Length: 184
Image (cartoon, rainbow, N blue to C red; front, side):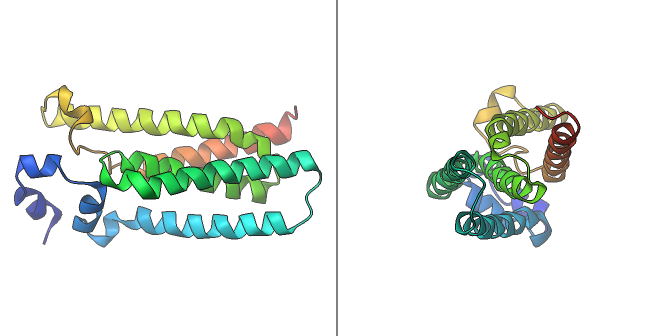
């Protein structure tokens, strides 16, 4: 069954009520690669966390930063798993959470200070929602839909994953470059 066939078989009223889980279950495997990447990043992030807390870190301040970073990420992950999958906003929240885990892994492997996470999180949140909003607005314009549907219906929220990923990798790379060339 093609993706368009599934959409054509669902009335607009039912489409508005679809949860994120319903959308994912209705998509072919190539559209769900993001979920598999999220699971891999989450599991590797947990592994890195165990490795960090089992090792002797430089000082208490450094250890405290890692604890706070992992606590924030863990709490957001639990909230996401508990509540977000029932709404159309699950995809942006899932992407933010995945990029939090990627950022923790990046900070560990690049040996940058863990305090960088405190500005990575808000910047990531802002650009995920900004890009999602722009994708939705272009979807509305392209399909000549009512702009009021932006927060009420499933629009293009599941699109643009590779764009998000490329932007996040460029963002982390720029942090690494700036931190190594212009130490604070």
